[in-house]
Image (cartoon, rainbow, N blue to C red):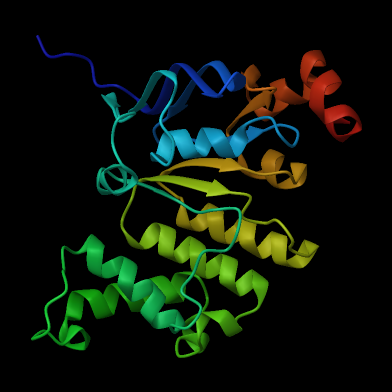
Length: 254
């Protein structure tokens, strides 16, 4: 008899993270289902970015386990986790400023297609790389800016480029850390539409402070306060949760 197929993309089991005597994450258990858009919210200092670092391998848990599709990944370095299909963005825009938009995306695509550095290869002649790079530029609406150095893009364009780099590797589990921070209302609306389109059929875990983004995008929301998950549920359930209102949402729940 075959074992049932799991529907879990990311799971944290009793995870703790301490720095010296200071506990940042306390006995955290979290499940993100495959194909779900899941938001992790909480006040500054709650441990959201630390959680992302634990999932993506930039930090190791003090105790507990992190799983990707039921495989324990807590001991793996970030590049091995990435090769298993998980990719993330960062709070601070993380692009190659002196390289063009095209070159930034192409670098991510090269690794995803199994290409490695070889001085006798002309990467411009690789049709799969070229076509995939062009397709992603179209998806993120930066085709017209393809030859511009990334450092000269507007802030919103750089964030769109970073999302493009994040999905260029073909990962089906995406972590986005405050992707709309610092954007105007119009830029935020465009970014949300982009994220919704590019994560279709993928699993998304997002950290975001803009509650209009969270409630408009997420299928489920988990609330992190002082390193502990105090509630998880649908947007409607989180809006109505008195503990969440008291600890974090306040008037924003109205």
